[in-house]
Image 1: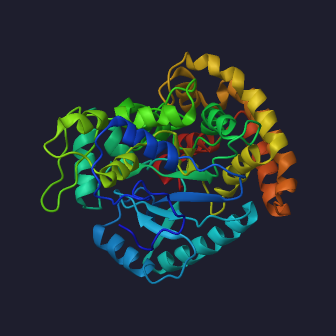
Image 2: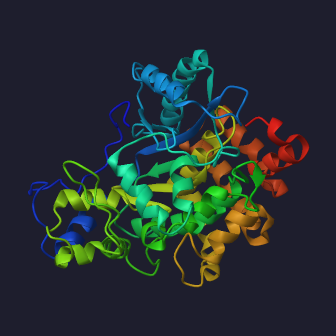
Image 3: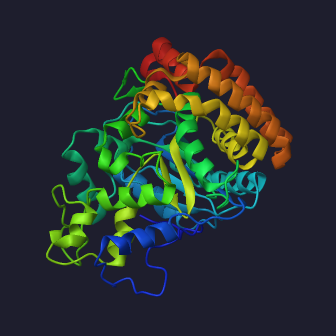
Length: 438
C-alpha cells in the first residue's frame, strides 16, 4: 500500500530502448539488463535511508491494533506533505523512504522532519511508532491484503514460519549508498560490495535489537536476522563474494526461484521450484517479459541488494525517536569517507574466513552475529575499530555536533561494553516482563 509516491528513484529493468512487454528469449538478455541497471557507478554522492516502524497503541505495546484503527491512521497519513515516501508493509508496519540526499545531514534533517509530522498525525489516534526489529508480543498477523502478499505468503510458507514472521512482524533501518567508482580503491564498486558483506555482520551485532518474539526471549540478539536466515536461500542469500559483483548478481537473479507470476485477475500464480532461468527456457506457458524480470528482482531479499545503488538491509530498527540516526551515520562514514572505508575493510576482511565460503546470511559468521551479538570477541574487536574510524570520519562528512555526540554516546553506552539495544530489552524483560515499554 503506497501512501506517497517514492522519490528515491529505483532504476527499472524496463528502462532502455525496449518496451516493458518485450519478451526475454535468452539468459544473455537477462545478464545484460542486470549488469547495466543494478549497478550504477560513479562518485559516491547520494545517501538515503528506509525506516520501518512497528505501529503500537501508545503506552500499551503488547496490545494488538484493530484493523479499523490502522485504516484510520493510514488515511490520516495520506494528507501529509512529506519529502519522503510512505508505504505500508504486510503486517501494518510503516515504512518511510527518504529521497536521495546530497549529504548525511541533509538526509537526517529531512527524515527527522517527516517523522515528526507522522508522529503528530498518529498521536491523536492513540498510536505510536516503535523502533524494534521484531514485534516482541504479538503473533505475525497480516493486515494488508493484496495479490502480491497473498502469493508471497503462499510461497514463503512452504519452507516454514520465518517468511511470514518477516513479512508481518519485522522492522529495520536500511541504508542506501551509491555503488561507487568503476575503478578500484576504497570507494570502488568491487571494494564497497565486498565491504558491505563483511561489515554486515558487524552492523548486525552492533545494532541488534530484536531478542523477543510472542512474549518470550528467542535466544537471539537479532531475531529479525535469524528470520532472514530461515527463509529459503534462493531468495535471501547473497551471491558468492569471489565473483565480480555484476556477474555474481546476474547469476543469482537467473537462478533464484520465481516467487509469483502476476495475472490481470484472480490469484497470482505461485510456481513450484521454478527458476527465472528455467522460465526463460520454457518453464511456463508464456515467456517472461522485461517487466517480469523487474518484478522478479523486487522479490529477492539478500542482505545487500543492488538497485542501481546499494541497499544495506541487515540493521534492526532502533529504539527512540532518533535512534536510527547513529546506524545511518556510522554506515555512511565507513563507506563514503575514504580513510574510514580503508580502515574498516582492513579490519573486517579477515572475518571472511569464518564464512567458509558460504553466502550471507546463512553462514556461521552472520549467524553468530545474530545470536551472540558483540559477545563474540572477533565481532566486538571489529566493532570497536570500525566505530572509532566512523567517529573520526563524521566531522569530514559534515556531521553536526549532535550527530557526533550521539555516535560517541552509543559507542560508550553499548559497543564498548559488548552490548546492543537487544541487551537492554532482555534486561527490561527480566525485570518487568510484559510491562516493558518499547
